[in-house]
Length: 216
Image 1 (cartoon, helix red, strand yellow):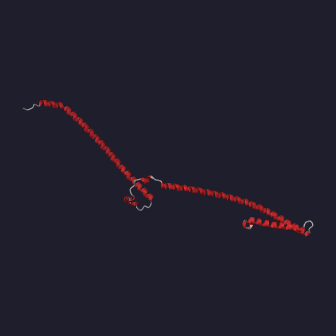
Image 2 (tube, one colour):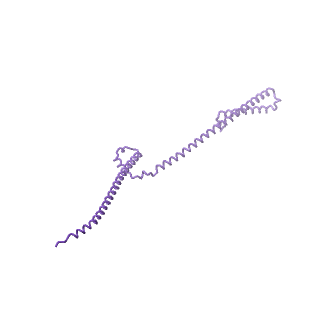
Image 3 (cartoon, helix red, strand yellow):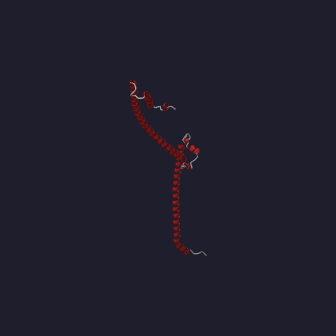
């Protein structure tokens, strides 16, 4: 592959062109000097021509040095830009990796939440059909979460009502127990009073028995 096909940068192409031209002038000067042998013994025209070629070669060399310096500065600038671009790419790649790890973490959290055996799943809720029959306003609700919340709320209300009934029955039971105890205590006191009355009446009964004579 030719060098012109490899180098596509305009500045470097100009350097290559100037280098070729300088090389041609140098070879021409060398060929001319080799043909005349000694330049001092050459004719004035040859010396003048050689002098022009030498000056042109010096000019080309100076131009080539300037272009070479410019190419070096351009290469440094390109290297700096490349380094900055690489740093930016590395930063973006790191951010992408962080987003990827965060995505995987969130996917894991979502999977854990979806597979979590929550307590509400173990609640003895009434069947959906029975719930919808009790509360038909939820029949057209396509949101499963909202429907589940409504069922849990219904279960909570039912349990609170049952708990209130239980507390009322417990109060009634305690009152009945207290009433029964009072009645039992009253009966016990009545028995004691009767025993006292019977004991107090025994002397009268004995006296009555003595005074009553049996008939002949």
